[in-house]
Length: 244
Length: 263
Image 1 (tube, rainbow over the protein chains, first blue to last red):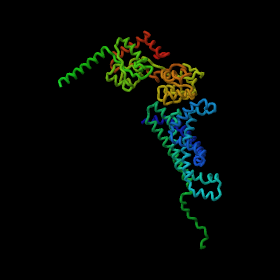
Image 2 (cartoon, helix red, strand yellow):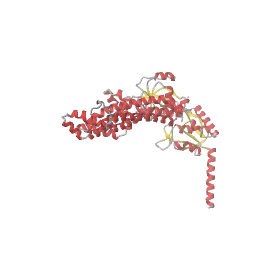
Image 3 (tube, helix red, strand yellow):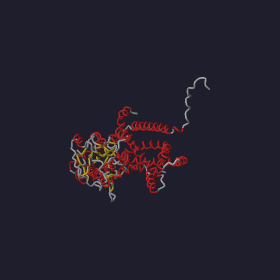
Image 4 (cartoon, rainbow over the protein chains, first blue to last red):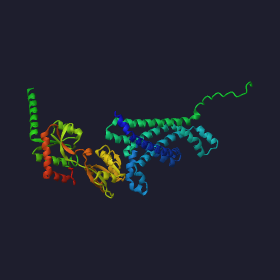
């Protein structure tokens, strides 16, 4: 175990970790934003809305992320003239963009499916009660169904966040120098396989538990109304002495 | 029973006689036969290639009677140690690791590393490495991961955007896709695997040949068993001779339009 080497390599590993976190953050933000309309389309009774989303989720959940990365990165090269005509090639040219796009589509598909499940799990009684109050469809979704669905989805979504964070390690295959990519480059040079992969692994581990800790806090907050009320502190007796 | 013992004795004697004569007259040469254009089996089933022609020329020059033996790459050094043949002429790089188990002759070729670019890309790479580093500053260069070429680029072209790929084919693909400006690899690998294929049309070598011992090793040599100095010296003399008589250059020209010997 060569500790000096690990310490020397730490700045480079941390710069790789920064790329990993950036890619994760972009993909999560964009993927979550996309997943809400996708989930709503997925639960729609209109097949024109439902079927394309069903196909999208079916494909991205059913194929390995590595294949999706190759498809978008190398596959887009084959359609370079078309993409250039559309002015999109400047984006697809960059491995960073291809990585974020692939991870976004992947996480959007998984998140949409999680949300679908929790939308359908909202108790019908609550929906009925909202309708009885005269809520419109939009208001019903905004006030009742989606907030409830988000709370129900959170534990499953926490898993998805961690999976996505770890899945970003695949982007080194399309030349990006994320944490894994940096470690691989340094291993090829120093042959210090154990030291560098253990160091990279510990960085992933630390971030994973940090993410889980934050999400647990969020979950705790959002479920406040479900916890039994803590015993209220005894109020000082303010009544004038002697009165009944 | 007696017959059987006699049989064994005859076999053992026969074997000893063969190996004794091998050491004296016939030199057996091991090669791989699966590494075009250096050594491979052609459509007619003949063993051909640059290594084979060099082997035959060396045997002529040294006055050996030679016999070629085909052996898979992973067993090629064990086969030498087990005396299945006496020398390996199979494009084997002279490395420190191999030097622990076998001896090498001087190199008989050393292909340089080179850059490849698109023909319509206006770019000249100066011979001087530090000037070249300035020229290539910020450009994307594709290279195969964990190769001597990656190390060479990282140490000498640190200002470039070095992109590492799992295979050379992927790096070539991204050159065609326009994601990288250049790729670097062994010149023969680039020539055979890319430039002379359909995908490689419109691409060509650019810049000088790179062959720096610190990164690229000492070149390709002939391996012999440790301590067999007579054979090694005879092969060294033969390499020198075919270089001088022009036989080497003829073989070179038959396969490549550049000098594979290096400096």
